[in-house]
Amino acid sequence: MPELSIAQYDLVYNMFSFTFATLLAAFIFFILVRSQLAPQYRTAMIMSALVVAVAGYHYFRILESWSAAFTLQDGVYVASGQPFNDAYRYIDWLLTVPLLVAELIYVINPRNRGRLTFTLATAAALMVILGYPGEIATDMGTRALWGFISTLPFLYLVYVLFTGLGGAMQEQTPQGRILIRNARLLLLATWGFYPIVYLLPIFGVSGSAAIVAVQVGYCIADVAAKAGYGLLIYAIASEKSKAAGWKYEAVTTPVPSPMS
Ligand SMILES: *C/C=C(C)/C=C/C=C(C)/C=C/C1=C(C)CCCC1(C)C
Figure 1: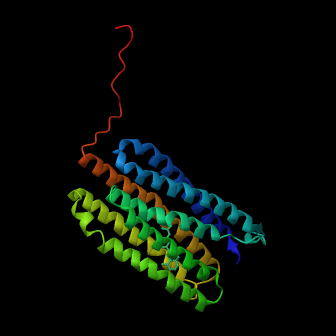
Figure 2 (figure 1 turned 120 degrees about the vertical axis):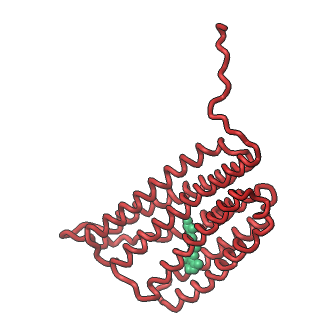
């Protein structure tokens, strides 16, 4: 672990804290809005809530690990000897990445979705599992090799999402179609960020600036790919609930007073 300036250490610390707070708030939001949706779209909201809960827990652990990995000495943060545990991210992805694809499939077509969900969730899990040996490798050839193998299920997943939803897309309302396209684009844009970060050491980026850039980058990507994407899933579910004739009444019929 290289030395970090106080500003560098604090920036990462504050980003972890911000991400944790955002995921927690998103969790509360997804749980609360569930009842405003038609019943067939609630599963997608539960999945969104699970994603941010799992990720929030891991951010809490990452924050702890970050604090333990450094000590302040003469105005700079030096390695404490306790390693910074980055494996939390991969465990987190293994659980959240299949759920993220599943929530999109569920909100697009809550009835006929079993096979597609299984195929895409398996591809997503394979991508994470195959990326890990490269992530922990110190040799750049090994990193590149596993990175390449892991990219295959990633490309397959993107290919299916952009070509295999044709029939299901026809059934959507025009507004629903736009929202689904946006969710798909957000997924591609945010997911594309992770392999770029993975490639940085191969291109020789190292030292304290690289550590800070990678951690801050992952925080931004996680907020967008988990909480932001969940909000889009909610917008789709809400639009489709309305299209299905579902009316949410926030205030129920008043109970007649016993006196009258
Ligand atoms: C909430 C976390 C998300 C959405 C994580 C997504 C992670 C990826 C899309 C990772 C992809 C990778 C490759 C395509 C190749 C190199 C190894 C990975 C695992 C970084």
